[in-house]
Length: 50
Image (cartoon, rainbow, N blue to C red; front, top):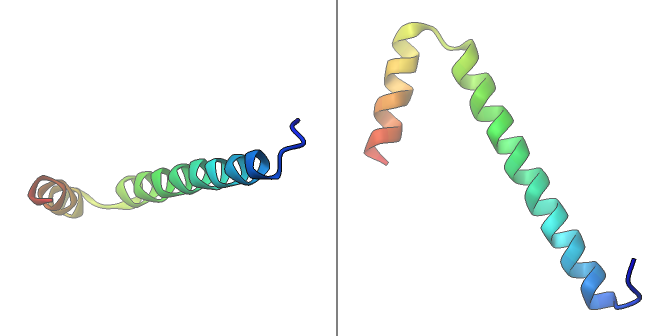
């Protein structure tokens, strides 16, 4: 790719950040999907409060 060590470090940080965001989105989706109706109402209200 590039021979610049700073560029490689930046690319690694961006890649890890993207993986972190995808992991968080997957966790939130799984939590929402597995919840019953009452818990979904609670999750929705908590999201609105934040």
